[in-house]
Each structure stands twice: as structure tokens, then as C-alpha cells.
Length: 385
Ligand SMILES: Cc1ncc(COP(=O)(O)O)c(C=O)c1O
Image (cartoon, rainbow, N blue to C red; front, side, top):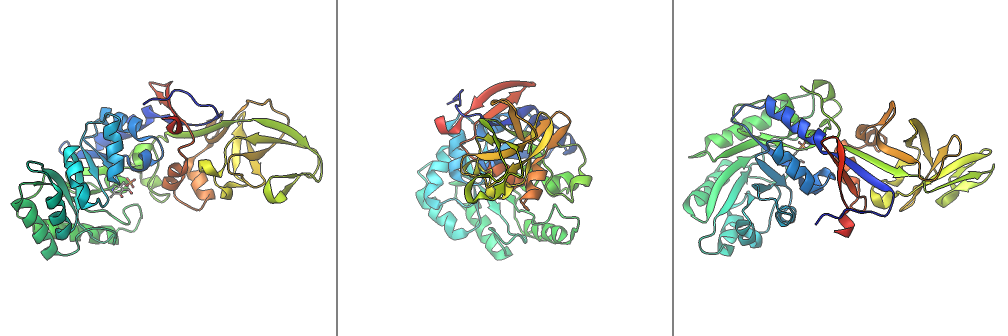
């Protein structure tokens, strides 16, 4: 499974020690009876699902969570045997496969459960977490009578185990807490209707787990903070412990040339040299997630900030250099170089988006180099797997 090579000098470094530390810090903050669900959907927010899942489990995570069944199956295929919850909607036709693979699914509809029941083979038991829509407006049960029907069906049918109930907050990362409080109250009112509480009651994402510790939940779902990133900019000053960013993005100069006044760079000739200028070419482009809106963004070379000039191409982009540098010189797009640093948050600000989107955007074509025990340990090249 592990492909140890890559043939293009662009790579993302993922520091597993940092991920381990971020989870350990969260665990010391949680009550002893609170389980930690590590959220590794979307290829672990772009960091690589298998290696992050393994690290999370080593750091004490009790459960893994993904968005879709295929992501859970991919982890099983790679040898992960820990419990996994699919947070999003699954097809009822997939019920037998999920049960066979010991994968817990999310349900929020009686008709879905009836269809899933018809798919299950004799003797199979499907682990089900019921989703309550307390105000996110995405998926989930919205009224008590529907919850009663779903609970009744889950209790009645031996092919189901009512393993958990959960909700998701829309604004836990905002300073204003009114919607958070309203959602929590709705969730509590729904829980009060249950005849019996399932094993896991979970509501908090990173933001809520970092800020609040309501006795109603006995599990939290930790996503963005596991990767060392703050759930929002306004929450940064509220973080109860320092988070360590775990991803860097690196490349190397593949060409260096001097332009003279009037010569231009890249598609559309949007950048023109004002005099003699050194221009370096980097083997990374929008197909790797380094999107065109990053034109003008700075990168680091020998600890200096230099700008991307001209339009970013599909596979390459150009930077303006203060002097000639040898081909092969390392360039940092995200991460530290000397005293300079470019954070995921800086890229998110440039793109007017959130840090989640930046790490998820780093494409499968970019190999991941994992750092463990403070050493470069192994490489995963998703396109050669
Ligand atoms: C249902 C659900 N739970 C938990 C999370 C993790 O949230 P965060 O990354 O903010 O910790 C997500 C992420 O989008 C989610 O959709």
C-alpha cells in the first residue's frame, strides 16, 4: 500500500507528532468518561486518512468519523479495525456492507431504517447513530414524534443497535453564543424524550469541545483542532492550549531565468518585468490546489518572502526572485523557513476562505511526507497507490 517514491519536487509534509500532541492536549481537557471521535473525513482534511487515523488511535482516540461510507471502507481496506462512524447520509442499500465491515452509520428517518432493515442479512446487526437537526438545517430529525418513531424501531428490531445520538453546531466557533445555546437546548429536549440513552451522546465539534464541557455529552468529535488549526479566527485568542499546525507545503525551483524589461510571465501576460528580473518556476499549480487566486501570494525561499507573479498555471507557477538561485532550491508555500512562516490561516485569508478549505484543497497529486518522532519517516504517493 505504501508507495515510497515520487518524481516531482512538490510535496506536503505532515507532522504526525503535532497531530498526536493536539489530540493528547484535548484528551487532558476532557472528562475521563468522554470519548474522542477523531474526524478523518476528506482524506483527514487533506493530511492523509490512514496515517492520521493511526496516529489519532495511538494518541487515544476511541472512534474515527468520516463523511461517507466509501471513506470508511477505504480505512478498513488499509487495515484500520477501530470503530468508524459515517457522519453523512448513506444509502439504505449499503446497510449490509456497513454491518459486515463493522461500520456505524447515521440515520435520521424511519423510512430509511425500514429500507436498511430489508437489506440486512439474517443475523447482521447495524450500529446506528441517530442525527438530530437542532438548528444546523442540514440532516437530522427535527421533531420529537419522529424521534420517538425512530427510537421505537431501533429498540424493536434486533437487526439494529441504537449506538449513539448526535447533533452538530452551526456557530460554536463564533463569539456570540445564542444559537449554540438554542441548539443545545433543542438537543437536550430531544434527549429527554428517549426511553433509554444510547452508549454515545455527542454534539461538540472542535470549537465546542475547546470552549464548553456540557455534562450532556459523553463524546466529542474533534476535526480541525486535531490538525493544529483554530476553528475560526475569532476563537484563536480563546484556545485553552496551543495548537500545532501539522501541514507544510514545499516545492523546489525547476527553472530560473532573467527577463528583461517588457518581457512577460504566464498566460494572459498579466505580469511584465520592469527591468532585469530573476524569475523562478515552481512545479505546482491549480491542479494541486494551489489555485489561481493565489497570484500575488508570497512564498519563502532561504527565509525570504517573494511573490508569485503572473497567472498560476495548472501544474506550474512563477515567482519573482531578488537574485539568481540554483535550480533545486527549496521553496516553502506553507510552513516555516528560518524566522519566516506562512500559516494555513494566511493562505485562507488571502483566499477569503477558512483554513479547513485550504488543507482539503491540497490535491491527491501532491505526495505526503510524514514526520514521526521528529524524523522524516515515510512517503505516501496517492496517485501511485
Ligand atoms: C458532523 C460533523 N461533526 C464534526 C465535525 C468536525 O468539526 P471540526 O473540524 O470543526 O472539529 C464536522 C466537520 O465538518 C462535521 O460535519
